[in-house]
Length: 439
Image (tube, rainbow, N blue to C red; front, top):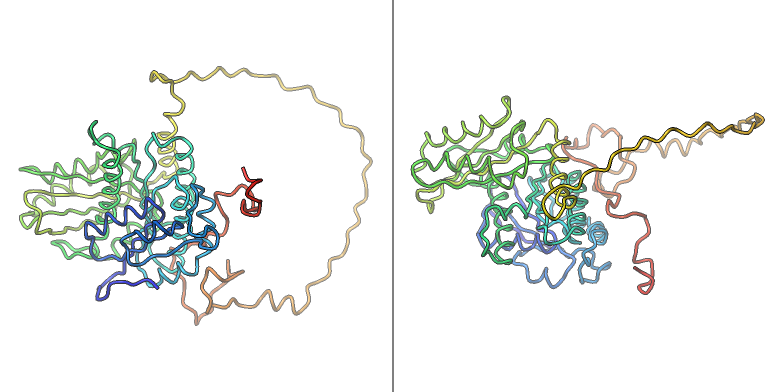
């Protein structure tokens, strides 16, 4: 049974690291001593799970994978998490906010994250996905899997923040090692979670409570995040400019966002003038009617430095934003190696074929067969109310039913649990086929 820190006041926040990438991000947050949150590591790989620093752990799909991992197959990751939905619900019950973090493109993180996010919403938690997309050098197949996972996860969370690892090269040096590159990616995930959780858990010069954060992040879909750090005389303005012009925003800006969450972290010398200056700059870049919620966190260890994290949500045309992200990913795969785009072949219009005479078919009479009316017993069973003592994810036939007056009303931002595997082309499991016949 997971163990959680006692004595925490206010909202209950949990961070779930899914798969290898999510587990590494979890270790990084624990190493940086992220406070006010509880950690849960979820993996199909028993060895990796045992090595994780989190005290709360959930082994996924032990019967399915026997603790050997998902083999970079998102379908196996989805089935493994689906197998343990009851255990996941027990671990997440009582949460007010759940962060689901993973590296997209592999097996467990890509496949299990949408299921875990769906369970988190079923227990009533505000659910935020914070995931990374692969570097280009990790291959096109991994990128395609990541895109499938992101689409599935977006339908399961309230807010989804996607960090494109490839964009980290814009702020990296040529001498940066591969290990340092992945550490940078973990740092970004840490900043995203800390930038939101600190507003809720840490008292500041200007406080923000959980209800404020929920207003900005509930049912908002795709979100964008940027972080900036400033030093010197104009440190607040520098940090704000870096946050809204962050390379992590890809080709999309915060223009059009109707919800803005701002975290300003500084030392004891942070002034009200600097806060006003930074928030005014961010407000000018957002939608004119944007709902802006900001808070400040005072860090005694920060001297002559200001860090600003911006989370933008509620885009008016979220579908076009997603299309822009997808276009950015796939554009590199359709360009010539010298940098020029391959020209599109001309469209040749083909005249329609001549009409084909259909053979005459004699009209047939249709004889209707009377359908027996339902019996009283069948009607009574159809009208029977569901058993609300059971969790929602175990009930059947509860969709579109009215909740009795005595039962607790569901929260408006819950969604249906994940029931169909988005990574499967058929209902047949590959494990139903003998090993020597599998491809």
